[in-house]
Length: 210
Length: 325
Image: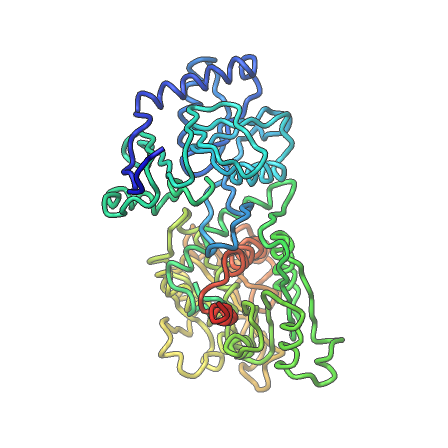
């Protein structure tokens, strides 16, 4: 990709309008493939998957005229890298009142990378109930899978190198909507502005399978 | 957070709130069909109980099993301890068998601290009650119950809430751990007990002391009744049980004098007719059973936070492995 070895600064690949269009398209795809989305349950994976799932639900409500059940899933206790870092605080898991048994569960996350988060989410689902089927919707698929996992609905396929970091920023936590790609080793000083939000929600950390 | 949980004083306000918030999240698990998480798979936790216990031991065991840890129950009765084995040799044996954590209850105050400070064991030490010293997980589950009733919500503390602890403070490890933790969380603690059942040096504890239960009732958000620990009493601390029961026991008349929102707590085991009447014990304002349920969530949170993540920097063994590099 780059011919030089100097780290490149993050550049924007999707802006707010792009993200909004992508969510609208995914919502239509869900309605089309699930034949009206009768038994769909959306589950957002913390942190940014939760925000995305909320937007997706709003769009689906617009299209179908019905309220689609929405929940959140914290997969911390199911991670395979728990022992690499000190124990971390848990996020809230909330399963919609109707449960997930016999439903079509659509997991929503921001970036699909190694696939390990999705693996953990599938394990978590297994303990919560038995869905009819599980599908995956992501805003960005950046490749480099380490497990045999694929997404059913992809906002944007983004071929990246492992040296690069993909940052998804959403208005709910980061003040604006954008997807940025830059080199991971780009000097931190220029990133200081968003370090605070990154520290709070380490989803933008490319070393962590999110 | 430190690697061990020996005293409630080990916990900073942030540590305590992290445990309470984690427990709040883990409490959801009891409503599920599959009440199990894979988090501590492959970790070995030894329950080392030198003293009788039903509630605490069962509660820890349930918490360990829900987190998928391998549980080994070690009771002093029927083990080598009854043949005269020392605490050190027991600990070395457990270390040799690869225990990742030891939950210890001991009749001697300070036994868990001795284990934690020694290099006999490399795993975490969790105090499940030592003599008349401390019982930190009980204090945590009490704080959890208090928060749910008096100031519900993640991240909330107990600032300004008034907790009155009544009864045998002298022999109570629950009272000691509670006063430390409740103080950390901002609550105001008042002890009510006959002078003979208050420990020496209580003036230095962060709490008020009173001998008059009726006077304290009106300004109480939560009343914590303690059991009179006859098994630890080797002298006459009060004239008769009836007199104790009249002056310091909780009955329906006193319940009516409590503010509307106030709750009555008891760490168990309750002696009905002594420190609490059946009328109060069975009233919906008594949280004794709820405290037991909360105990499982709190102990899961403690086990997860101590064992679930990476081995912390102050653990023995990490230095050795670094030196090996």
